Length: 350
Image (cartoon, rainbow, N blue to C red; front, side, top):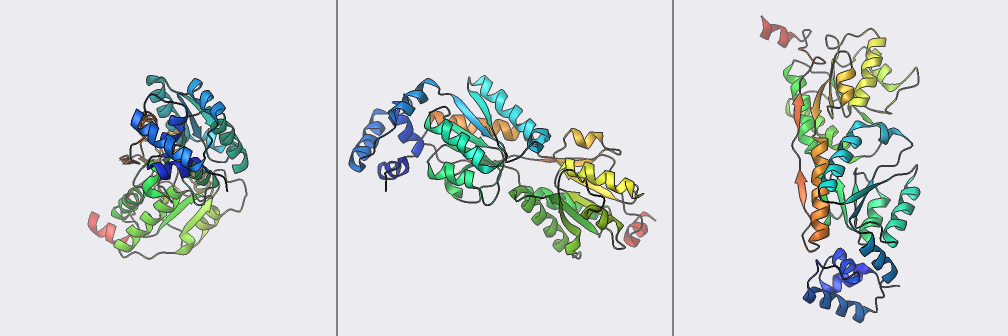
């Protein structure tokens, strides 16, 4: 079995990025550390790709930004665009270049990463999402490539640099906001995917119901695509049922935009018949009628922190993995109101 850069790093007691920078004679690595790494390389018989190392020294200061697998949705989602804006502006100030990596499937993305890493075209990668399972993260980790994750790490937590919000707490507070308005029949709608933020927000929603002794109905938790094209869809079925919810927590403004459209087509008034609270505080939250109450997760700061961390670890390769939690806040608009059909609400108002 061939010796890998990870084997050298383990024997030398350093990070894989330190081994990579030793191969390219990076000035940020001390003479003592370089000697220790080179002894480990000699002991294991590791032969670095000097062509790639030379290219890395020539094409350094480039960071790859990895978008999720998507044909077009990721490019249309303001959440990703705002993160990229934060990354780009921070990189510009530090004189780093960034390049976008995406594809219609994981193999396309992996091929781009392999090409960039083997030719030394990037010193590190920022992954704009977290999901389980993820072959891309597995590849970055196994190859010892430097990466920063935006979202909660699912594996190798102590070795992963990640930037995230407390999505469980944010969704819990969003649900409690609706509960305080007198709503007891509250649904949760999220994307059709396995992104960790969606499951964390669902966990926060369930936690709020449990804490306030409210019943949980499985049919109240549904997953839908960003664009609802079918006439019969889960949202329509939910909102047409006799036990329809009076309020909904939605994991994304784009979904809330689609949900509001379906509600209006069914003759429901927002917020009188249905209160909606969503996430991201994107442009979509301001384009709806009425405008959406939304949790602003500070997407721009997520990007800025990610860029700051990866550059810091590039220039200081022996740093320990950092975890940063970015704060969020609620922007109240007109999509939520008190549930006047709740007897307790009526009594409190009298």
